[in-house]
Image (cartoon, rainbow over all chains, first blue to last red; front, side, top):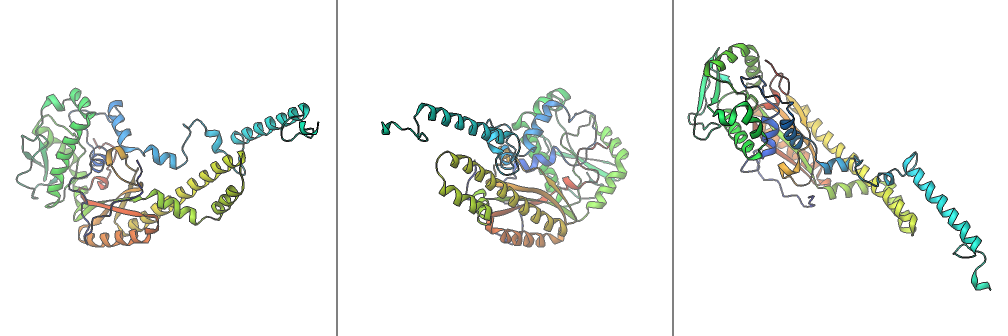
Length: 125
Length: 261
């Protein structure tokens, strides 16, 4: 959850750990992924899917950040994002469809003598 | 992993709370080790346990605590979590085999520390700042207030997309600036992906997650530089979070995912 108010940084002239207990994310991204890697007697294959699941979960960018960067392909209305000058396909087609439908509707309304664009309104009769 | 003659805390608790940390020496080096039960650390149970966050947290914190306490006394080179050997002599053989690369690492890291830097920003302030500096945003907003009906919806989406792009560009600018200044000043630097909020519990947007290798006696300067950068970017509500000193996980020669043996 995003919050607009950030807590103030711990004061002090010298840098130091701001929290009494070290952040688990800081620890895990170091001990799991860094340091000297030597194959011990017990083989731990880091490509093992189960371990990789943790690594993926812990080490990749959050979904919120990905969305912020415009990586939103999973959103159902993605076609609405492709607007603006120079855009092809996607949104352009949708806009064109809307235009065509509107024009058809106006034509039909004129033929029937109804609707706002109609020159022959019932008021005249 | 230390040089054989170097000091380490006498009362270290190992990865298993019931057992002490022991020292295994060979080839002029000393490895700090914990005796652990096969029932938890054997190949099969280990796979399950590594996926149990509570277990992983306990073991990771204990592992890090040993390194952290020793860091205050000697140059120490961290090995990755769960590097396991069946016997003391197996550890000694490893030390003899890897002696050259370990000595190289210890020499390269003498008198140096790793410090972590995270740049966090208030997303609302970031967005407001980005918006304030854009003529195009102002123009779109004017057009939007003049137009009504169905056309306004499409225009609003376009404005939103534009504002997102502006925010992202500004975020990148801030992150790049902070990292460039720190990298310039430090001995070495690495960047990491932003952390997962579920794990880190951080507030705001994480724009940068980096580690820097610095001379231990210049750490005061690092604090000053961080304060300066925070002030410089106060218009976007930046907080530069400093953690350290860390054992030099990110700066062991050949460190990272490549195996040595």
